[in-house]
Length: 252
Image (cartoon, rainbow, N blue to C red; front, side):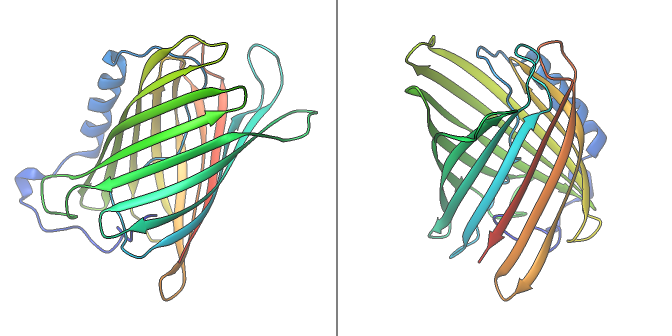
C-alpha cells in the first residue's frame, strides 16, 4: 500500500461507525444510477487516499480475462510502474503498458502517468479523503484522462474503500466520450499478511464482483512487499463471464 493503514483505527464516536454491508449496498445502488459512456473492460486496482512521506515503490499489475466475447481469445494487460512521494501529500507514479493476446507476442501498448493527493489525515474526519488524476496514451494515438475522489472508512476490523472517477477518451479512430467509473472494496483486516475482501467494479461496459485476497510482508525498516489477487464474475452480458487481476508492489 501507499501507507501502513494497518496501524489501527483512529478513535471515533460509536454513532459514526459504519456497517460494512450497508456500505456495499449503498455503493451498488450508486453504480446503478451513475451515468457512463465509453467502451472496454474497466478493471483495475483499488486506490486508497493515503501518502507515505519519502516512500518509493516499484509495482507490477496485471488484469484480463480468459476469453474475449467478440474475438474469442485471451486478453491480458500488464503495467510496470515506478512511483514516489512528493512531500507529505502528493504521490506520482509512471507506468509502461504491455498487452498480450493468446498466440501473439506481448507488445508495448502505451504509458500512463498518475498523481494522487491526500486531503485529510487518517482518522481526522468521519472518513479519509483523497484525489487522483491520470493521463494515459495507448498505441494508435488513443488518449484517456481521468480524475476522481478516493474515500476510505474504517469500522472496527472492517475497512471500506470507494473510488469514483470521471474519465474522458479521445484520439485517432475513436469517438470522444465520457465514462464514470465506480470501484468499491470492503475488506476484513484479519492480519497484515492476509486480508480477505470483496470488490465491485462498475462502468459502462463493466459490472463485475468477486473475492480478493491481499496482504503486506515487512522486509525490514521501511521495506514492504504488498500482494493482491482477485477473481471476478461478470454480472452483465457486455462484461466477460470471468476476469482476474493481480499485483505486486515493493515499497522502500
